Structures are given as C-alpha cells and as structure tokens.
Length: 203
Ligand code: GRF
Image (cartoon, rainbow, N blue to C red; front, side, top):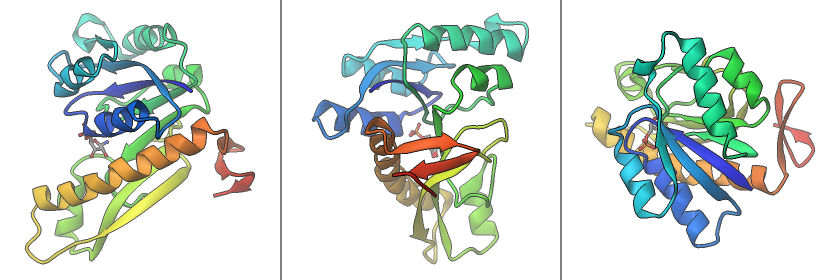
C-alpha cells in the first residue's frame, strides 16, 4: 500500500513504521516523508533509510487554506492510498481532509476522548490519573475527535515525570500505529458512516 507520512519533529513513529516496512513486516511502501519544518530530525532519519523527503514551510504562504492546498498537492503527487500523521503539529483544514477523505490516520498521546490537544502527559499527571496511553484514530474535521481505531494503556507510576511517562507511551504508540496501518493495508480497516470498521464490524 502506498503511503505518505507527515511529521514535524523527531519522527520516532515514522521510524518505527519504516523499519517494519523495510523488514517486510508491514505491507506498505513509504512514498515520501513530508514535514512542515525543514529542521525536523525525522527528515534526516527518513533520508538515511532512502525514503524521499520533502519539507513545506507555512511561512511561505499567506493563510492556512493556501498552505493546505499546496500540502495536499504535494502529498497527492505521491499518489498515496493512506496518509499517516505522525507528530504532524498543524491542524489540517477541511479542504485537506476532504482531499484524502476516509484515508488519514493520526496518533494521539492520550486515551481519547481524554486530553485532546497539547501537553497530554502533563495533563494526565496533573489530574492524578492511574492510567494513561495513546490512541490511533481516523482524521475528521473534529480535532483529535475522529473515530477510534486502537488504543493502548500504560500505568502511571509514582514519581513519573512528563518525560518518563511519554517514553513509556511512545513505545506503545510505535506498536499500535503499525497495527492500525497493517489492518488498513490489508483492507481490514475502513472509515464508513463516521465509524471505524474492522473486518466488517464497527469498532
Ligand atoms: C507522538 O507522541 C504522537 O502521539 C504525537 O506527537 C508525537 C510524535 O512523536 N502526535 P514522534 O515525532 O513520532 O517521535
């Protein structure tokens, strides 16, 4: 399955997906890794794995709609059947989402619907939650609100900091994102009637 991965930073999820694809564990072809930040460390990681990379900075565009139009054209030029958001830190406009409707996945570092938006680890710690985790969902116009595909829980430990907790969550992110992409690539996962379906059953 041809895919394009969008990142803004480190790209550890992208790297985990690329490694599984490279060893034949995941039936995807990463056509490109695209970043809105030229300095994103994940671009160098992707390049070192011989994956084509592009960066498109929003600074060159007057507004969100024109940036997203250019981004959609760039992504579309690689003809992906799935767009994978992996730490892409921009909110996508309805125009972009419509261009790839039913085929955009995102990973979010919380047990959605808890903690949409930013600083999820800090918020879970401040709330005194015993459980935290991550979620893969289809992207719709509702920010971090699209239909859930898979979640993983981690226990919050006494003495956890944002960084110890996020490291534990990230290990789960790498596992569940590959799982969701594998399902999609094998035709087992769909977005229909505003729900995620696995093997013909609503999740
Ligand atoms: C992850 O925590 C992901 O859940 C969030 O952004 C972070 C990206 O990390 N959306 P990385 O760039 O994949 O290392």
